[in-house]
Length: 315
Image (cartoon, rainbow, N blue to C red):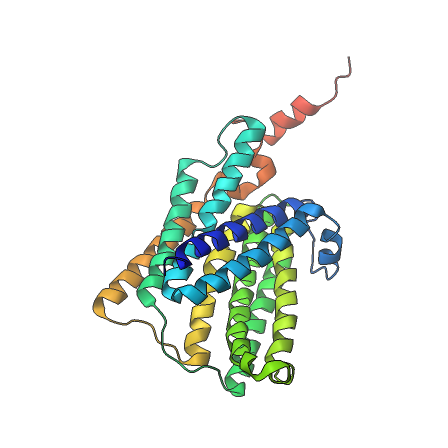
C-alpha cells in the first residue's frame, strides 16, 4: 500500500507531462477534419515523441501502482493529473510573459474537478464481478462506444473551422471522445490480462489483443486531434474525467462489477458529481478556454487594438 501512493503520483505527473508535450508538438496543426496521417507528421517532432514516451512511462507506473494498491486508492490519485497540467501551464505562461496565466478561479475549478472525480471513485469503489465478459456484451459495448465517438466526431468537425469559439469547442468534444475511447481501452486491457496466463498461444488466439491494438491506435489518433484542435485547458478535462468514468461504467456492464450503494456512499457520490459539475462549469467560462494565443495578449487588448499595434508604419 505504501508503494502504491508514490507510484500513482508518478503516473499522474507522467500523464500530465505527456498531455503538455503532445499539445506543444501539435498546437500548430489544427486539422479541419479527421486526418489519418496526423500522427505520422507529429512523430517527426521531438517534443511530441517525448510526450508519447512520458505516456508510456505513466502507464507502466499506473500498472505497477495497481499491483501494490487497490483501484479505489490509485484512481483518485491519478485524478490529480489535471492539477499538474495546470501547474505546467502556470509555470510556462509566467516564465514567458512575467505574469500569472492560470488564475485563482482556474485553480479552484481544476481542484473541484479533481476532488470530485477522486471522491466519486473512492465512494463508489467498484468491486466484485467476473474476470472476463461474454462476447455478446463486448459486441454491444463496442458498437455503443463506436457510435458515441462517431457522433462526437461529426459534431466536432461540423463546427465552423477558423472561428475563435470553434477551436475550444472542438478540442473539448474531441477530448471527451478520447476519454470515452480510453475507458473502452481500459476495459479491453482487463479482458486481455485474463488471457496472459495462457502464454503466447492464449494471447494471440484471443480477439482481445487485436482489439487492443486497433482501439489503442484509434484512441491515440483521437487524442492527437484533440490536442491539435484547441487549448489544452479545453481538451484535458475530457481526458481526465471521462476515461475513469467510462471505464467504471463498462466495468458494471461488461464484468458485473458493483458500486457501493449505501446511504453514506450515495451521498458522497452525489457530492462528488456536484463538485465535478461545478468545476466543469467554472472552467468552461475561464479565459484559458478562449485559446492560448488569446490569453497571451496583454490585459485589455482587443483584436482591433492588436491589429493597430501590429500595423506597419507608412511614414
